[in-house]
Length: 589
Image 1 (cartoon, helix red, strand yellow):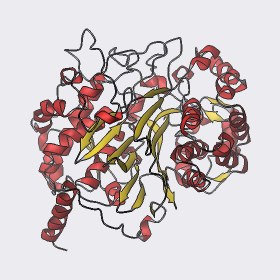
Image 2 (cartoon, rainbow, N blue to C red; image 1 turned 60 degrees about the horizontal axis):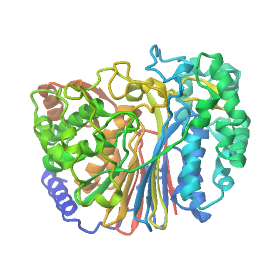
Image 3 (cartoon, helix red, strand yellow; image 1 turned 180 degrees about the vertical axis):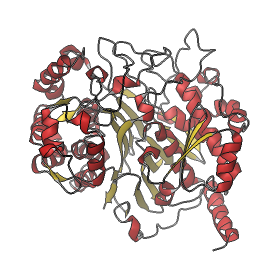
């Protein structure tokens, strides 16, 4: 096929996207994508592991809704992906309820206790301090969402996870690689050694993994609810174990923990409403980048082939990560101009910085100036996150240059769900570092959330009961009041850029969700470093050097570039896609 024909096809797709043309009937799944792509009429679950996706679809078939499916899949993936998430993790979830036409965000990220947390220093890549453990939020958050919006009994929703832990599952290649890479951390605890280092060697792909201790803990939670974790025997075991390793966490810290219901951040993009995670999560970065791209992207030219399109994409991502790094923090304790940073007005003030190819280090914009403006009319129905009070000293705000664990080393999982009624959930859950701190209690690893705090002050400085900043950004797109896309990703600093590029390639270039996920990605930083996957043309690579980026390349299968799990409406069908950079799969019916 000639380049002229390819360009014409891309142009047609772009014009159709702008005109909101009816989407075509989805093509059949090609052989290389079997398992990774699924076309369904009723409901879909896309997650980081086939066991989790099957657990979610099992709930849909049994009459459950998207929340039931998401909660079941998250408990299940915590069993089979213990390095990424689990009972000791924390995260956030965007919930869309179609009948109510309502969006709710539940922040259940792991938080500091009364001791205030700290920007824990000394990460070496192996064993890390138990002082890095935050109060785990996953159990509280999942059960809170289920109690409020779920349809099936709690015991039914947790049944697949209990079954996987008690009867066992087959280890995949990703688990085997992660265990081999983190052997020193895992061997710290006898319980973890027995399961993941049997006879002193790391588990291998194809091994059967049975976790009776975890099964017993899950059964307690299924029977007694969150109290089993936060005030019962698990809480006592957790505090005793962490205390012996230097953690200040107390039983009162655990008992006081509550997830927080929040309004979504909102903007529009190509005629769609985009709902993403409020602070201290990083939907503001996703929305600012989209606002910048909406007026600067020279589609149909592909960023991987055309220096102009590359410059627009890299500029939008570079500026948005700069602003997010300067302002993000826990809005329950500090002012965060998230609504301003997510607005079209702010994007207009940042357009010149994004278009500047003479400097790869942008100054921080003044998001506060736009923070008090009314919400855009298309966003008003979705109860946009309330405005913050501006703190006394923000004029000299600059992005942090300190690399945090959440930005460089994080292990995270994401899943997307839709059901037959049009409800949807975008949910991200994370241990922080791989296997968290390596701390092990009652069959599960504990997170490393305290590493996310900044030691340089600012909005992300540690303090009592504060939630640290995170790059997770569960996102849902609506078209005419109905879900068109559910998207999110693991991958630390790659999370917002991976989400933005998936949305861009789907809506601006008319690509199938699987094609959009497969496109090579870039991850710019606030410091001028640019991570770039193989697949960009020589002309683009030369332009990146010419613009001044510190370019670091990587093969296209590198999981550091994210692991997007997306579901999109194509015609009258759902199309789910799992990122080939990870071992996820999609299931539906």
